[in-house]
Amino acid sequence: MTSTTLGIISICAYMTGTALLLKDTLQNTPHKLSLAPVWLAVFLHFGYTFSLFTDQQNLNFSLFHTASIISSLVALLLMLATLSKPVEKLGLAIFPLASISLLMTLLISEQKNAFSIDSWQMAVHILSSIIAFSLLMIAALQAILLAIQEQQLRNHLPKRFIQTLPPLQTMESLLFQMIATGILFLTVSLISGFIFIDDLFAQHLVHKTILSIVAWITFSSLLIGKIKYGWRGQTAVKWTLAGFSLLLLAYFGSKLVLEIILQRT
Image (cartoon, rainbow, N blue to C red):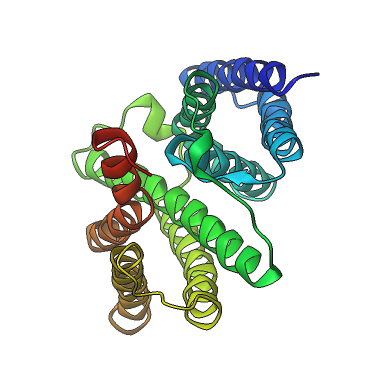
């Protein structure tokens, strides 16, 4: 089976799973089997990435390929979380994003940004960075849902979708669990970068380094505020979205400007 075929089937499976999840949400009748197509989609998505690596003997970290790799990991982490936590509703945003990012890699050729990982040190840095971004992306989506849920409950007008979500306290607990785990991997990413990368403040890396450090400070401050001052609700939402926005700029800001706007690597 070719990589293109794997990608197309994965996209179809993502969209099928999204449709089934939306149906369950609207009817308020959750079924675990509705997520079965997504397991297939994630498996094939990783298969697609692996087949490209096998063919090219390297990983392509251009804009859309990086988005595809991250979205596959986000989908996998979410699916693993659904085994013990009621977070499947986040899939309504994550699964379509995964299918779109995969579609873009199929439609747009970006071979000039291929990058070969030739050491375990670099592998640790890159993998921890991707996992951190993935976990904190899930946390950001969780924060958005939490904000909507809290607002509608405050106005005493909860809509059907909000009524299918776990209680507010459970949503907040899940949010801080995701953030704490994401900070752990972000810490590993930053430490490994300082140790293993010769010049982390070189011209092409300085913005990523600074933004990642500021994001780490933002998320860490939120956790400290939660423990020491009891921060929650809208405060937690604002700090989470601010931290993730910084990471988004660090990971994709320069790629968007250089590769899409300026047409450079």
